[in-house]
Image 1 (cartoon, rainbow, N blue to C red):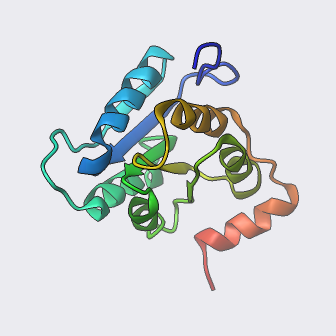
Image 2: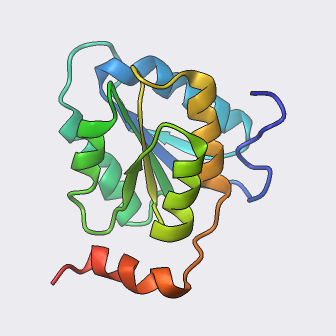
Length: 156
């Protein structure tokens, strides 16, 4: 993934990253890469390959993004599905499960996603880095999308 850096277009960010046991290797590799790119990264666990429950780590990630401790969150599990569902239980989080960069870009542009979910068993490391790069370097368009995003945080 040479030539594409997570901080090419934006300054360093405070990023939280969490996974379940199925995605611990990808979490570790992404964490180290993000640190090399100059970001401040909070690794919320787990720290071992012991079986854990993805909702526990999804909720933890959502909490630090919702309270502003982290500007963005990266959630990982085997498929990305379960952990994205748990992050999205927090009304202040908009977690997009993606498998390629265009979806990550659109999630930022149109949905102001503040969390990104990836499936470690479905997505290779180079593709994951490309998705994270798109997620971190794309701005929210606002405008006509803002009212829709507002409805996500305050359902009626």
